[in-house]
Amino acid sequence: MDLFAQKKIQSTEPILIPHGELTFLTKQEILLAHKIFSELQGRENGPYSARVTMEKILTLPELKSNPFRKRICHVFSTSDMKDGSLSFEDFLDLLSAFSDSATLEIKSHYAFRIFDFDDDGTLDSRDLEKLVNCLTGETDDTRLTAEEMRQLISNILEESDIDKDGTVNLSEFQHVISRSPDFVR
Image 1 (tube, one colour):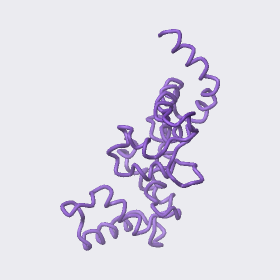
Image 2 (image 1 turned 180 degrees about the vertical axis):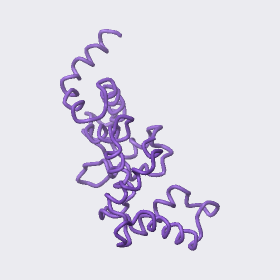
Image 3 (image 1 turned 120 degrees about the vertical axis):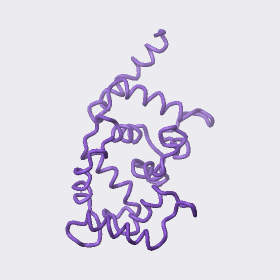
Image 4 (image 1 turned 90 degrees about the horizontal axis):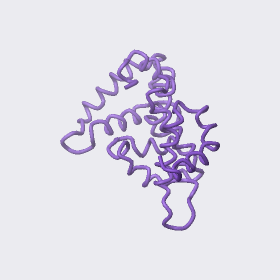
């Protein structure tokens, strides 16, 4: 490692150490995240911005082909503008929640928020339809018929809606997820 790189890491460490206590990321992962975030910030228009736009975040290979990429940005963004931009802390939260070290409870909590398209705290038939469409694609070749969609949503609610109120709340979602060991992967 050259001296410049050592200095950069050393000067960055005091800022990043508290983040390690608040995430599931290792110190090295946090340093790498900081490097990636800094590269995304760029310097086209003068000084670094405290936030990175959703458009730049979506250029990351890990998100580029994810059908929930925009929802992921919106869920992790703390921007008052509701524009999906991320601060470094938001970016660390996103990486931490998707890390291998994150608990099932954390992963399922964020998955639920991502799938709750209208942000009302429940997954209703509209959320489930959007979820299915994201997973299957919305082209004529992949879109389910209205009857197939109705039947699938009915089956999902039958399996997941424990209190039979027509929606899936976070605890019901987590109960279903706890029975799905593949979810953590």
